Image (cartoon, rainbow, N blue to C red):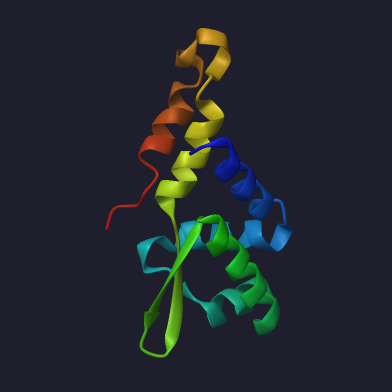
Length: 113
């Protein structure tokens, strides 16, 4: 992940509702959640949730796929891991062992399918 991509991702996450949505999708795993379920759980109107989902998708942090008449959203674990790795690249002034636990999490953050 380069700096421009990181800025877009952090910009998307800097809004409370969008951060909440990403956290819900991370918990939901590879099955994801339908847009309506996300709106209900986040206590946001359908039109408002659509705006937030579009911003998160544009940032690359989530993905969508159509299943029948529903659109299912999932966390993009590769992009989320890339964001963490971006933060850890120049870790701890040449002492990467300090950041090793966080870097390990970033490397394997995608859930098992």
